[in-house]
Image (cartoon, rainbow, N blue to C red):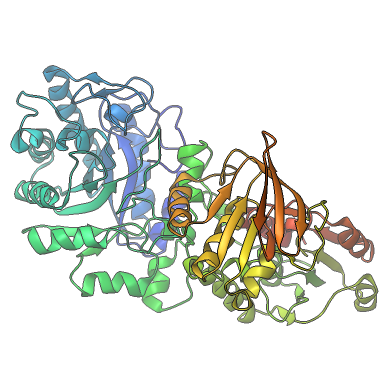
Length: 616
């Protein structure tokens, strides 16, 4: 819904201005705002458009986007029955999309909502917006009126198709009267609802055509697929993870493009590659594409696409959405440390150039080396192996991790196009550091896989997940036990199963994928594991490993022997101070960053590498 989890006064905060300016400067033709509250009937905090006091902030929002030439539409919405505080909806029903049964809007309230939305559009016009987008997607309020799943009324606002469409059509007509016919209105709606009696292909065409007949300038195709109480996998995911194909809603937009007259069709979700975006339009599947997460990863996406320059790729990890919606924290991007702090991005040249060596070429080391070099330092990046990338290399090996592979390729391209010198196949020791005598040393050697302190835990058939992924071609037709049910363990198990191996997983917690779980991702990953018939033994620990088996014990004391030729450790990383401390002592001015200090995600590694590179 928004860039930040909540806005205490519903006013546009100053921190949004540079974020919007950077996307406009980056070449976006049209920037559709985050959702602004369009009616008094909502309690969840979001930016407001439902009162005149919000006009100055709305004007600040529009001016930031106009500053570099982009057009902007204000997106107007309300949550309806999905408002978790005091929810109203077209009908008082139980639904998988509702956390609680909502109250039913009265006819008088609905008339007020129509007027509220229209007045919000008028305020957008007064604030300088070029148009508005009426948000009826994701089973929010307007979508609830449209959908036969949600709208069970039998009055002028429900009962058949035309009456279900009365609220959005009357809003569009009222906007035309208040703002004039030359003030454009777009319409965003769910062209598929993964719900009983929800919107499907044929009804989506009727809805889009009905709104086109009312004069909307485009229909913005989206979907409803996420059930808050119990996540359910949809054929058309609204926030596709890296495990799903890209451009997931192209089939929906193509259906409308072929069957709807007199309006444009906008395709969205998972569009991160310019060539694929061009193809969607060239093949007649859409008239426009909406770039969402990819524009968070690289605000220069449009300009770089036009100039055919390297783009910092979105990896569809969904951290951005998870941060705001699930854990109610400010938005963040795994690959872009400057998201929502754009004014910190310009690099200050150093007043004194230093000789810097960075040991370790994972995301922390690469980022630090690049930033330090751009500041004017003489930087050498050392890597013990034959290629740079650290754990990005094995992590991007599975075919379903091609988005992460794109980030690895991006990092490598940035390094080799920079002034950073790269020294491969070199193990850096304290003696070597003392011999080189750098002004500054940065240690980014990563963490060490957590081993199992059980009989057989150090056997030859026990390897780390990283090692398994790097030599997967040598593992064929094996019986494999993966210890650890986090993301790394599940991805490793899935890939090895897809390669024809018989795979079991052992997890000490109550279930797999419970730590740092991102629902949009885990729903898909779980389904893929089930499809591959990967066996999961949760609430279980390893007692012993032999050359042909793993003995496990469940939390209730039940013991079982699993046949296993190979045991793969995916229980996480740990700090190895026996490696880092001697290195740090070998140079008076030294830093340790990344997993060798605190094992974490790519997001933390990139951010820490950026911060360190700026203070050298």
